[in-house]
Length: 220
Length: 220
DNA sequence: AGGACGCTGACGGCTAGCTTACAATTCTGT
DNA sequence: ACAGAATTGTAAGCTAGCCGTCAGCGTCCT
Image (cartoon, rainbow over all chains, first blue to last red):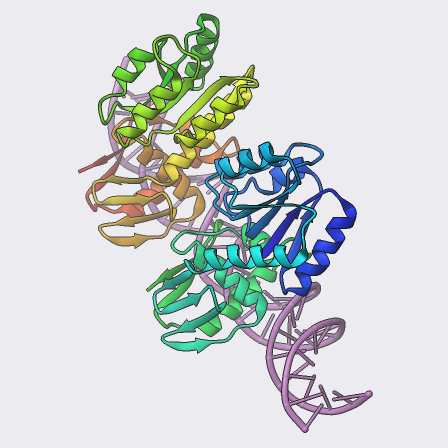
């Protein structure tokens, strides 16, 4: 899962992207409020955390946040705001932001808050479908109580399917959530699904294809 | 199912009622907050959707909404509010409204939101006719407790028929709702109905034809 | 009877999805 | 740094089964 950074200051953006990637996060960046609203329009957009500047071109960060919460999306949001803009901060928290940080801030401080938010989130993330389990904290899978090691892309794909276990997920969505817009061949998803199926075998969990719709993970 | 419109502006009301009925909705209208509270007092008031103006005589729309949710009623609510009344809007969403629209708005926009809300609702609904069930979330059918896998067009056709179970649906409507204006032979619906009948067999549900009118799905 | 409407089975084009193979890239251990 | 292994992206062929159409037949109404 990636971190979404919504920030228009170019210098700060570069600093943050660098620092976050060094910490091992994958980062997606948007500089415009309208763009951000659009990107967050899908019910599940595949971000683990959103860093949100309130002072944006296009539409304000508060509107972005409002849009997000209106979609019943509870992705943790950390607000970045100018020191002294108390009012905005308060409104942000009212709208369901999870934390805030006043600029300028120390990078260490930011990283600590991010870790805290992600930990809080992931602790809830032990998913199970049939005999397949996913430990969100350790980012590891096990199948029939045996650890299952997967290459990164297959991990992300499977995690995404587990998140939506029991309901079909269409390919476009899988591509977006698991591979975050990285360019890819038109049958890449199919190939990965094929590889995943080989690994999963027939051990109490099935990756069914729903023709014309997408794929669906379910217990057997 | 009907749409309930709670709105005191007479002109707007007339426009909306006209537009909604043109879209095929049955509309009930109340102009007063107190009346609305009373009407929504029953746990199931039989409305599919509520369009709620916040600025009402009697008692405010927010109170209506609060009443509604206090009764554990999760009917989708779309708030209509004056542009700029951000605070009310936010409170509305907090109280469990599903969406809002700032006046003045384009009718197209309203209709799009309504469709979205109703669709979202349907997606989480489980329909049942005789021994035939449709799980809206998983987009899957089961017949006599056995999973029934259908090709996409047949799925859409059957879903549409189940949605109007017990009442006849004419072919033009089926074509429109299930196939969304895609071009098709004049015989296509009949062929699909035929294929569906073969799959459904005689397992407690029948797809009767009402000559000159259309088709009708019912339990046997 | 005659016509309109609906039913049914069959056929062929076509597309979505599956599978395999292979080259490019990245990872890993020495 | 190097070789070998694993992962990744792409292409190509294959298949099942969906989709649309048609022609022929049955059924209902007047």
